[in-house]
Length: 244
Image (cartoon, rainbow, N blue to C red):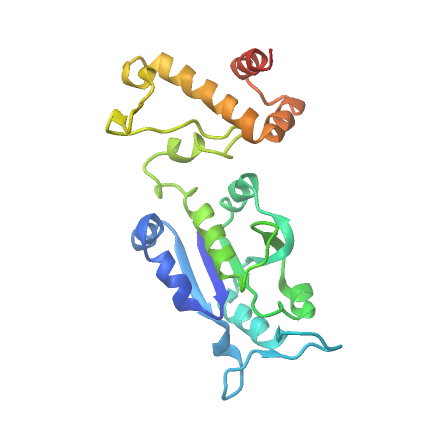
């Protein structure tokens, strides 16, 4: 997969994308992530890409021309899916991440200032996504969140598929509690079942904990899964016991 990030701050993005799991995945060729500076397509000696909004108002608006030219240069003759990161977009979910991970070419547009000229959105944007109901100073952090969440779904990026299929939001359950050494810390002990070596008991305990945690923190996830008929028989039994 190739992911292109169109941004005013490519160094900021590169600093994050060059570290840890994603950095190693890029180095190994498991994902191709490139950051392109929109200012390189400004077409003026000051590399200016923003101007005052028509109709008045505070702040500046990114001009359509540099964004469009940057996108055309990056896209070439490829068929890309362009996502604009904006608080006005649909909220990003793990389900959408799974769908996007199946695509070959993604372009992520990072807005800044008061946003971008609506005309370029109408011209080239395929989808608008938000990472939450709050506003940031720019689209770089949301773009990095999206690039990270997609990249870790790709084959070979994580050690094994269980690394993401058993965690929160992959399905309809939040992840069960995790523990590591030492077995006792500040008078708090690791649950005995995790030290038992009985894999059947461990699996059952983890499922019970996942159901209980989801019921406590995100009951909407269980309600939606129940309505869609996605709960397993075991999950239904545990949920029935917890509610009784």
